[in-house]
Image (tube, rainbow, N blue to C red; front, side):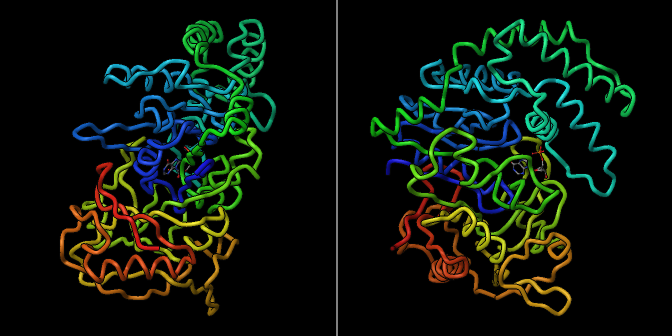
Amino acid sequence: MATLSIFGAQWGDEGKGKVIDRLAADVDYIVRYQGGANAGHTVVVGDKTYALHLIPSGILHPGRINVIANGVAIDPISFLGEVDGLIVRGVQINGDNLVLSSNAHVIFEHHKVVDGLAERWKGEGRIGTTGRGIGPAYADKASRTGLRIADLLDPERCKERLGAALAEKNALIKRVHEAEPLDLDSQLEKYSTLADRLRPFVADTGKLLRQAYRDGKSILFEGAQGVMLDIDHGTYPFVTSSNTGTGGIPAGTGFPPVWVEKSMGIAKAYCTRVGEGPFPSELTDEMGDHLCKVGREFGTTTGRARRAGWFDGVAARYAFELAGTNSWVMTKLDVLSGLGEIQVGVAYKHDGVRYEEYPAHLPCVEDVEVEYRTLPGWNEDISDVREWDDLPANAQGYVRALGDLVGAPVALVSVGPDRAAMVTCPK
Ligand code: IMP
């Protein structure tokens, strides 16, 4: 494998961190290309649990080069906090194994303030963001008022551009949101100290990655969030502010799309979503509570309880097709153990029309009725299973049925949080 993309095929939290961590052992470069510290990847190594937000999961493997490319929105406070936290726990980090793009946009204090304030105005249209300043930072990037890491490292340019940005944001914060404005001088002082600490990590990551490819190095692109949260193709407006699928790679890295050779989606054996927005197969009953409890469904980034539901084959098929997947990894199959029967969404129904294909128009998705197929469950605890033949026949049947439903074979099944808890599926 020379270049591989890993993406989430649901609404995020599919368990990508664990899969990426496993694959990272065999690659040279691991690259984040979109999103920011809104992501949360949990990796369990032996008795240690690591919650990564901005730093690629490859950091836990010595000798790998971890890249945060230009499409990521970087909060220097989160970034350095994560670096410090990992160093304290014995992880080796320096400018050789962790590289930041000079063209990535910076998330400032004012982006986080506006993220929180703007949500309060939205009423029913509230997105339930992570509050990490993601939307406001990407909005500034598109309006050409943002600052890139390179601007932050240049004191004169930073003063000029942050001054102009804050003048506008402070007017908004004060007059529209009736909140406390931010002081430019103290912001400049704070961010110039952070800039000094960022400097050793900064490089032209597009050039670095293209050269790595030419040198025959293997590269893993690590998607954050999931396709259903993609700004263009997800459940807009209840989405994040970046392209979360494979489509985000070329723009978010400066790496040619034709050089990305394979892609692998990650989806849970059921579904979850955190924050607001349509979720057709959501279970608001005891079964939903059961999935949340057994699956420990609490956000890695915000600690919020996730919403849970049955596997949605319509949305997953759409996500896999959009991102173009060769095979996929089904995570958390162990959570379904002990259920007599398991439901799987196979079609949507709306106003008397049956949809096997995901309808792109949001109002239809908001109140569709899901048509389910019932599959038989299994009682055995499968968390110690490591071989396909040791899985109960109904668990094997469930994996095969979901592969057929979404039109892409399942390559691996994850049956527990630990790195080793994986079963390889027969071809
Ligand atoms: P934002 O990305 O903070 O603007 O939040 C937008 C929406 O995406 C909200 O519904 C969040 O809960 C959701 N979201 C953002 N990042 C993640 C993630 O890593 N996992 C799951 N949901 C996420």
